[in-house]
Amino acid sequence: MEAVVFVFSLLDCCALIFLSVYFIITLSDLECDYINARSCCSKLNKWVIPELIGHTIVTVLMLVSLHWFIFLLNLPVATWNIYRDTQPGAAEVTHEGSHDQAWLPPALFLHVSL
Picture 1 (tube, rainbow, N blue to C red):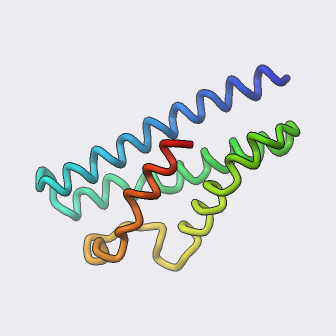
Picture 2: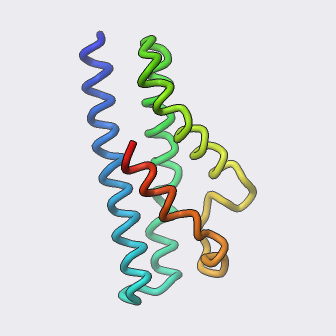
């Protein structure tokens, strides 16, 4: 059972890293004016909830399988993702409010490093 938990966790973390790299590439394309803000928002909005679900599944799986150290490493990022996505209107990145979301790239780099 423990091997299954870690294989699933590995695959989920690989998907989350790929998703974070996709976010960074899309945001850098926006910064270089290769795509417009509306297109960037539509690309990123459809991946916010799957990122939240993927990270929460890994955190809960580590809690259920009693891997406390790994659970405690994942808990701050999972808590931040849940907090960020449960705020009113925060689940969607809008092109009008892009100046208010200056926290997004540092949060992505934190997520990639964990």
